Length: 378
Length: 227
Image (tube, rainbow over all chains, first blue to last red; front, side, top):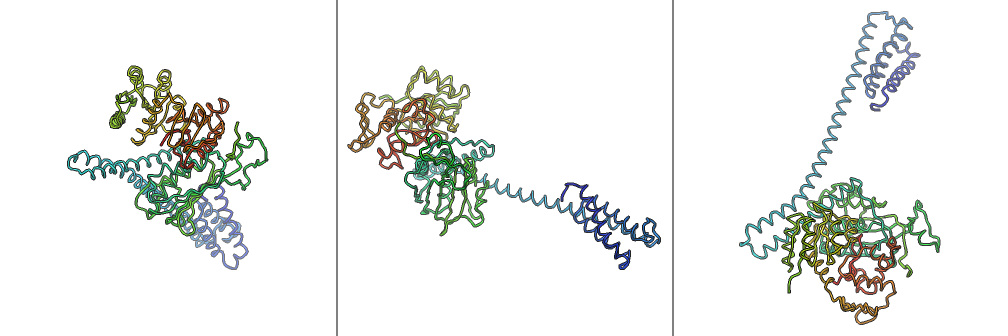
């Protein structure tokens, strides 16, 4: 109950007071009408803990009147017989109001404190993210600048081997920077909602093998195996986006697992059994009718036998700027964010689990129509 | 023999300088143009052997310049652009570009593409027999041999392969392949090139999964190239 419906809360506060008073009425002769005041005060105090100030004031005034009218002799008048009772009702009134005011203040302070804590933690989060991003962008720039300056200023002193090392620094730094820039550009395209998949018939084997081929220079020390069933049908997906998905997942595996780690890519096309897609498996139906119906799911599975992800992080890894707690360098934490965005842009889903026996396993599913590869000649 | 001349149309001075040095080191003579107007004049008056064209020029849209060039300039044009959307690339290829490179790219890659484009332009136009590694294609007798053994290709497979061979080194878009092999009514049937390229690779490549001749250009099309 926050700012919503102050009138309702006021009525509720009044009603509570009346209910408590009614409950006290039959027993007031046994406990004495002054005890009733304490019970009513208790009720108002309880209300003050949850209700806004105005409701508490209404409850305080109402309870004072009710007490006076029904309980203080003479009954059923607002007349107060003794000076003691007059003092009591004044005290009652002051205590009830104070109760409301103090409670409201305390709640207000608590809220301010909570908001501050929230904004502190989001500021801290932002700072952490920003630090990692600026580190990841500035480090390669520093490497490039430093190496280039050294080459320029010490042209004659440097040995050929030193020159080669510096040149390797320059191209390595530029490559890393280029990767980060691509991810940042993809991120802003995703956030602007500018990703509209261009779905075309694709040969999954061609997509996976050509993506892997381009990453050959980066795969040093890792062995990659592609396992595909025979005669995988064509699927209708965005080639470029899917290539980027596979590329980022492979780069991720290459960078965050030790050399010698095995990476396995497998893919399959499964008939959609979830039932929310139409099935049109009528034998002999003309291709034109079948070709655009989403009846299947393309599954791509990329796993490695490295250390895997920390338990409980399988959702967080897809967050923007995510980095596992214990990793020192490498990556802006955007690669997997972009992967998830590109999968979802195609109507698909991605999940991460740790393999039995260790290692990370990414599973992607993208709904798609299929087309058998054995087309006839025209 | 005279070095081939390459015209660089690029507005960024740093990239122009870099390209000039890299190309000179690769054994080419360079002509430099900083905008579309200069580029057009230099292409017409100096007749370079190849044009490297940046799509983002200050005074004219690169696509428009390309269309204009193609009305009279038949030699290779390679697009060098930071605009990386597939749609831009496909448009440029449809306007007659031979190949494209998206910035940032490696210099080695650029030189390989230039070599390939120039070879395509000068390679024995006279002989109908072409060799690519252990593959031999005779366009006159419509025969294809691998390691001296005749390959059995279907008529569509042969038509696709012949199109690739005639456009060696050039990136062919899916739509171009469909128009040339199947006809203008088939440009939407994007499954055809996938299927027939898959079948061709099984017959002509040593490892169809790691092709050396018909290379996939992601989301754009294919390039036939030796090595």
